[in-house]
Image 1 (tube, helix red, strand yellow):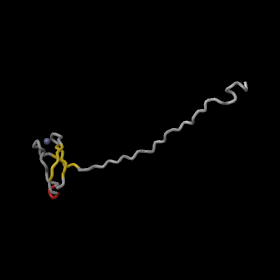
Image 2 (image 1 turned 90 degrees about the vertical axis):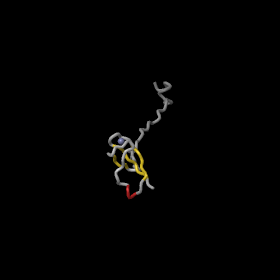
Image 3 (image 1 turned 180 degrees about the vertical axis):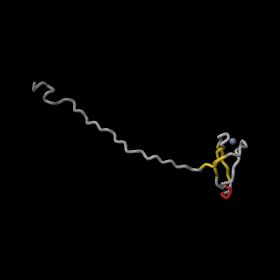
Image 4 (image 1 turned 90 degrees about the horizontal axis):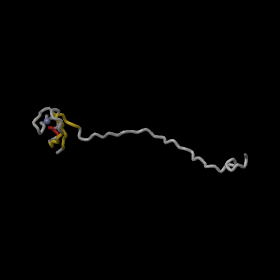
Length: 74
Ligand SMILES: [Zn+2]
């Protein structure tokens, strides 16, 4: 038997009910006794598509080694 999620709009509680599919759209009553409930979707797949993050690449800075480093040209 399928299971349906409901949410009470009076107290905000969510609850599950097992009922036949023929009765899926029947009004459900909150466990607290509130008749104002809405049926929730059982499974909501939220897929977020993120943009490609291009990480800035830093060129490795060569540490010296040039001819001016040792004072050969000065
Ligand atoms: Zn309620």
